[in-house]
Every structure is written in structure tokens, then in C-alpha cells.
Image 1 (cartoon, rainbow, N blue to C red):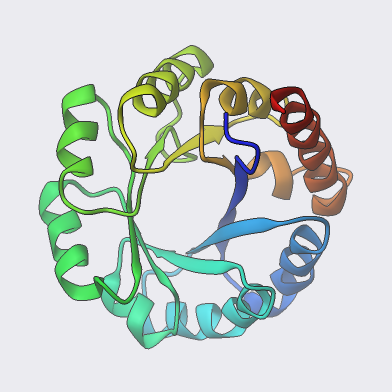
Image 2 (image 1 turned 90 degrees about the vertical axis):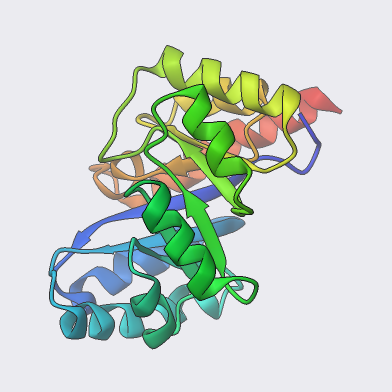
Amino acid sequence: MPDDAPRLFLITPRISEADSFAPQLAAALSVCDVACVLLRTQTRDPGDAKKIIKILAPIAQQRDVAVLVEGDPQLAVRAGADGCHVEAGAEALQGALSSLKPDRIVGAGALQSRDEAMSAGETGVDYLMFGGPDHPQPHEFVLERVAWWAEIFNIPCVAYAQTLGEAADFAEAGADFIALADAVFADPRGPTAAVADVAAILATIREKAR
């Protein structure tokens, strides 16, 4: 594992109202270095989604944290996001790449097989995600995929951790980013405590790797 890896990739719950979520997002980003936030909205109305993203995105971007939206390249552009995370298959991924590259980030998720992962990797995506809040996979499955990918390929991989404790295994397997969703935002102690815990875990692993 490189000394400077992995970094945190936060995935929000589905947000229906931006103002009440803004303090949680700011708290999660106040603790340590975070690479990216995937902002997910509850609404399917593009206009309402745009309003939510435009309120929340600057909270991250002013901290030099990249902001992604879920599955909608046009929303990414209109809302001023930094890119799009795509889980709807090869056609949707190609559409996002055509719309957003090279100026914005495009990542791929919901990759069920090694063949799917390799095919996505050949398209020019910026990262692949193994596991995810809408596509939960057993810890052992994600761990195997991360170790396989990190050993062979150069495109960064994101490992989705369902618990804070899983981050250690994924970091040691070679993940470039650790994605966390409910493990942070549903933590009864609040997102600040959760992010602080995982940051401490990753710092310990970095020290061991040196």
C-alpha cells in the first residue's frame, strides 16, 4: 500500500432537504482529508436535485473535496459538480464519459464480475468502485476484488466499507479510496466521531506500511 493511500470517499444518504443536511456534511468533512463526496438526492425531479446539489456542493468544494452526483451527467454540469458516479451499465457509462470527459470525473460502480470491471476500466474512467450502498457485497467479495485489481491495474479502485472496521482490511489490500456511507452518516455519535475513527485506523496502517 502506498504511504499516501487510501483516502476517504464519502457517500451521503439520499437527501430530500439540503439545509438540514448541510451541518452533517460540514461536520464529516471537518475532521481529516477527504478526497470525494458522492451527493445522492431523494428526489427524481432534476430541478429539485439541482437545488440540493448547488447548496451542498460548495461545502465540500471550498475544502478542495471533489463532488460527484449519481448517474446524471447533465445534472453534474448544471449543478456545478465535479463529476458523476455511474452504476447503470456500459451504455450509461459511455454516455457519461462522452458528456463529461476530460473536464470532469467519471467513476463506475455496480460491477458484479471481473469482466465487467475490466471492461469499465478500458473505457477511460477515473475509478472503479467495488461494493456500494445500493449494491451491498459481502466483505470477503469486496476484499478479493480490491486485492485482485490493485495487484494488476493502475486505475484507482474504491472499496465500499459497510462498517468502519472494514476499512483496515481494504487499505491493506491496496484500495486507493475507502468509501463510507451509513457507517458515517448513521453513526449515533455523529459523523465527526465516525470519520475520526476511520482516519485513525488509516493513519495506523500508513505508519505500518512505512
